[in-house]
Image 1 (cartoon, rainbow, N blue to C red):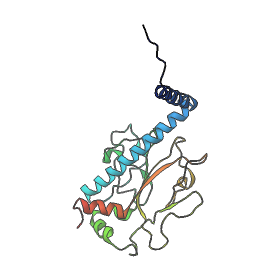
Image 2: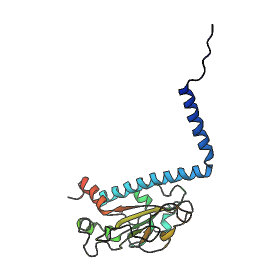
Image 3: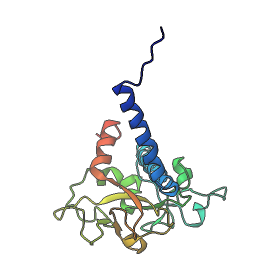
Image 4: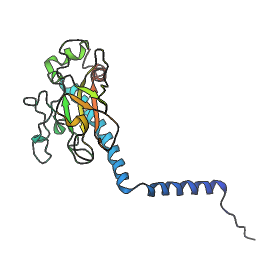
Length: 218
């Protein structure tokens, strides 16, 4: 005699979970799914860039200089090469060829890059890395990070200024908020209708720890 057996409660629960995932995926527009993918890709790329910059410092005893606007063009044979002669104290583009990283972000925009010029000189780099934060003229460019309301994200007493800043202009391919202003202030805030930049910065304490760990500094 044949026996017929229906779904068990566990099997039914698994089916409902799978159906729920399928429905959730269908409810998210394709464009939104693509944006989420690009954001995650950018986060991964920024992590790689951060590691590449630290590696450059370990090898060269200084931070890399920006690449000029024209040399950031991925079509040029000499594009993405750092230029320490004409870009001191200026925002340029990431020297992607010098660092051996991707030339563009997930939206095919160029990576923006700014560095404190006091830390691109190998002669004074070690001295500045080990100096007290209250040392006069330690941070030549006095780079600052602010939120969307203009509040500084740095400590008010002897702040540790960012040594280098890298950011993607995001989906709209345009620097947003204060990042669109040519000065020493950069904006770090949540995504909004008016802001989709993705920014990282390299701080002296973190870099110092890496250099000591590798034996580059005593």
